[in-house]
Length: 105
Ligand SMILES: [Zn+2]
Ligand SMILES: [Zn+2]
Image (tube, rainbow, N blue to C red; front, side, top):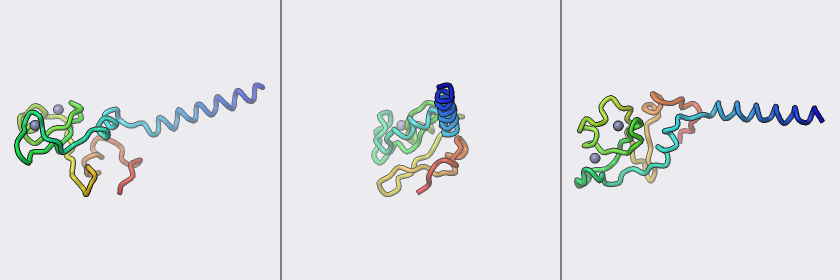
């Protein structure tokens, strides 16, 4: 019996290790769930799109939001529209996270 319980314990340790290895910064999930290219509520200017993401504020933003200085010194990602997908250049992500786990398409 004792051998069985030890097995379970070992498995849990391993799971924790896997989780730790795949740990992503907490903003990443919010970033991935966020939609971009909507009109900015603060700057409803024609052809103006929310194509930036501020990691510090956990918010999408437009170029006017950025130039207002509110996000100065914040970590900002630029989002590109690629076919039907919102993409971010791997190079800019790499500054903030370890991208070795991320699949590039
Ligand atoms: Zn804006
Ligand atoms: Zn910000």
